[in-house]
Amino acid sequence: MVNAFDVIRNRISKKERVIKNVLQYDGEVWMDSGGFQFLRHGKVPEIEDLAKVYDQFWDIRYFLNLDYPPSPTDSDHELEAKLRMSMVNYEYLTKRFDNVLPVLHYHWRTDIIMEYLVKYLDFNPKCIAIGGLVPYVLISRGVPKDSRRSALRFLLRIKQETDTCIHVLGLGSPIINPILKLIGVDSTDTSTWRVKAAYGKVIMPGGGERHVSGRSINFGGKKITPDDLMRLHKFLRDTGFPIIDRFNDIKLSFEYRALINAWVVLNSFEEPNSGVFRAIYDELVSMFSKEALERAY
Image (cartoon, rainbow, N blue to C red; front, side, top):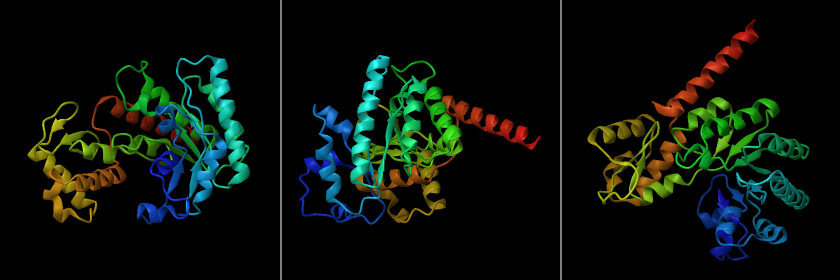
């Protein structure tokens, strides 16, 4: 996943038409509008300007719509206004491109969000991108009570009521992956593999993170133990990590930590060990088992 904000900020030549050449990467590439990054810098692009960036590259699998994320404190009028503006942007982009995905951000007024989901489905998109879940699911402080369950139930509701393809923005994590898989989410993405590596951390199979760089710890996470290192090494070996022979580089090399983190995020689907995510996972398993039994009879 790349975004239009970075394309503009890095002043990528308008003569460059192949994003994979820029990235030196041969896999599938999606392009986000960069709306969140633009908002942080105080300016949202005009939809016509965003379309010019999208039009530059021919090898993007999907472009994401420029939407206006709602705030939990928005009134019904404010929420509807943002959803309407997002819909106008989507209608504009679909007239220019045949590979634009709509983006809907989670909001606790889920009935209103679902109304717009149905409107987007009238365009027959290949997938729906769902954003705005990270603060509710992965951040434990300052969020409403039971927000994790509410946000994940929202994904389940979309899947059960529409059976459409769902891509979840920013939620890729070893502790969340098994829950998303149970719900039937088709794909997700994250930048945490790179961010954690930059802070000297590795992501552990099944969830959690450990400091490995030897630097002083100012916030978050624990220092890695010999047992942790053995568990991580075993996971990498068992899942076929291709450069495990460089495992000793884990403490000194940001690039190597980033590769390990990306591998763990992509390949760890262990059931959560404990805590609220284990409880949510067990609730989903129980619910699906009950539904299967009811269908059988």
